[in-house]
Amino acid sequence: MDFSLSPEIEAYRLRVRDFVATHVLPLEKQPAAFDAHENLREELVAKVRERARAEGLWAFQMPKARGGRGLGVVGMAACYEEAARSPFGPVMFNAAPPDDGTMILLEKVLATEELKQRWLQPLVDGRVRSAFAMTEPDGCGSDPSLTYTRAERQGDAWVLTGRKWFITGAQGAQHFIVVARTSDDERKGLTAFLFDAGQPGWRIERRIPIMGPEEHGGHCELVFEGLRIPDSQRLLEVGDGLKVTQIRLGTARLTHCMRWLGLAKRCLEEAGGYVSRRMSFGETLSRHEGVQWMLGDAAKDIHIGRLLTMSAAWKLDQGDFARTDISIAKIHVADALHKAADTAIQLMGARGYSKDTIVEWIYRYARQARLVDGASEIHKMVLSRAYLSEGADFFRWGVAPASRKEG
Image (cartoon, rainbow, N blue to C red):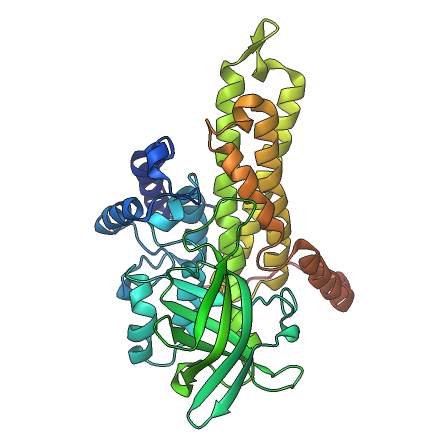
């Protein structure tokens, strides 16, 4: 595989980098730009998003025919990483969770253009936000089989009762995907549905306070008290709920890695600038061997994470599911992000621990990386099972088809 970027993607990456530097990084230094949840105020975000779209820096993950850039997963990896040089960059390009995962899923599974115009296009255009409701208080987390929210068939509709929680972006979202139990079948007992925030029969119980800064819309607990969803708003077939979650979370886990790498690089950028200026015992901190070990070790892990992520992205572009590759990347990059933030704070001392830099924001945000979209331990279980099943073939190389000789 070739890890070099095409001239088109490289040019686009540099445009994304320049846009972040010009229009996003300055907002980080303005206390008045933030809301009560330590995110940028939505009216400021709307203005920057409008500029990004006008400049053609929009929806990297969507086809050009739908208003995106159609960069492919490798192109997404390069540009998501660059966008996340600021924690607030991805949302400016309509490349932030949970909407990017929802868009990728709906583009793949909605059967007609009419359905895509109703549920997908408003997301691509940035006119609405979305949420994916799967996790439950006493039910599924990493194990979807524990889902207890039920959908009962009544004529040409389904009636939902149950509860979901830690649903990212739910407050203010317009389009929702919910996974519910439709039978007790062990493998085909779950079904996924679309619903609109305006439909009656559900409510947000609370916005759950969390340790770190929040995405827009927070992490909410939802209660379903007879939400009626037409069968026409079902995703795929009855019993395909697990398939829907796998389609959505596959690429979404990797886009998390792409963004986390951008944040990890930003931490080292802040720390590197600091230790290059800060004097200690007659020389800059960067001249101290211990500091060099810490920076070098963190940089090494980020580089490994980039290779893992780009390798998985390349496989996805070739039509491979890349399940084990994504799990490996997810585990490693989550750890690399936390290590980069922790290293930066240690090297910057009180300045890193203070709110004078973005590093402490990233540090608190980074702790969730080992939990979201499957805890690291779950991904290690997946890898263990794959290895025990495949043996030596677990480490096989992909082989390109033989080229035909001319003449």
